[in-house]
Length: 400
Image 1 (cartoon, rainbow, N blue to C red):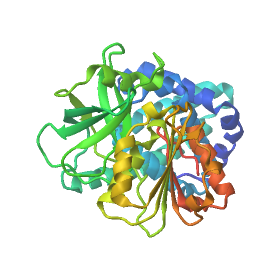
Image 2: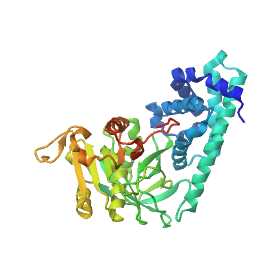
Image 3: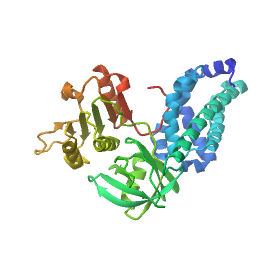
Image 4: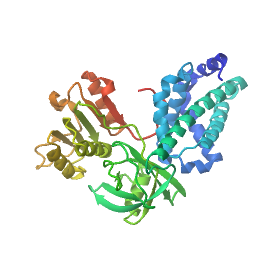
C-alpha cells in the first residue's frame, strides 16, 4: 500500500514529468527494446517512429502522478487502455518487464536527483497501477471467452473476399479458419490484426475498425493504403494491400472497443474524415438492419468523389432507411459534384436543423479532425456527454 510520504515524493516529480516526460519515455522504450527485443512483436513500431507512443506514455505517467491521491478518477481511461491491451493480447508478465525498465529509466535519467526512496515510491505506485490494469484486463478476457464463439489471443482467419472500395481502400472479408462460430460484436468495435513483416523480421499488430454490422458469417475490415512510401503508419496496411489475397490467412484478436451506437430515441449525427467512416458504416448498417427510426445526419469528407468509399452502399441505405440526410465534402470538386460541398468538412456549412442540440454525435478521423469538430459542437452548446469519438493510436490515462 502506498504511503502518504511516497505520494508526496511522486507529486514532487510532476514538474520534471511536465518538462521532460517525453525524453524519459523515449529513453525507456529504447532501453526496453534493447534488453527485451521480443516486445517489438507486441508494440506498434510505427508509433515509435512518429513518437506517438512515447508521448502517450509520458501523458499517462504524468496523469497518474497528478492523481496519485485519488487514482479512481482515471478509471474510465484505465478501461479504455484495458480494451486496447486486451485487443493486443497483453498479459501480466508484460507488466513486470515494463515496470523493470520504467523504474530503471527514472533512476538513470534523473541521476543524482533520484533517491532510493523516490524509486521505491514509484515502484509501489507502478505496481499498484499494474495490478489494477491486470484486473481490468482479466475481466475483459473472461468476457471474451464467455461470449458464444469468443476467444482470447491470436486466431487465424481466412480471407474469403476482397472488394476494392476505391483506389486506396479495400474491404477484406474474413472467416474463422477452424469453421467455428463468430461472436456477436457491437457496431463501432475494432479487431487487432497481426502480420509478419519480413523486412523488419518482426510481427506487427494494427487495429482496424469492423466496417460492417455483426452478421454471424464474416468479419469485415476496410484497409487504406498509404500513398506516402515508407510512412510508419502505413507499414502494415500497405503490406496487406500488396501481399494478401483471397485464400491467405490473417491473425485476429476478438472484437473490442466502446465506441458504439447509442440506443435511444435521439437523432444520430455521424461525422467522419477519410477512412474514419469505417466504424460509422457499421453503426449505420446496424441501425438500418434493426429497423431503427432515428433521424440520421451523415457528414463525410475525403479528397474527391472517386476516393469516396461506400458511396453506393450509402445511397441504398438512404433508400432503405428513408430518414438519412447526407453531406459530402470533397477537397477536389469535379463538374459532376454539384450536390457536394467544396473543401474540408465544415460544420458551419450544415443547416442547424441537421445538428440538433439533443442528438448522438459520433466523430471518427485524424486527431486534428476530431479536435476541430468536437470544439465546434461544444461551442454550439452540444453537451459533451452526447459527443462520442474514436481515434486510433496509443491510449493514455489523460482525462477527456
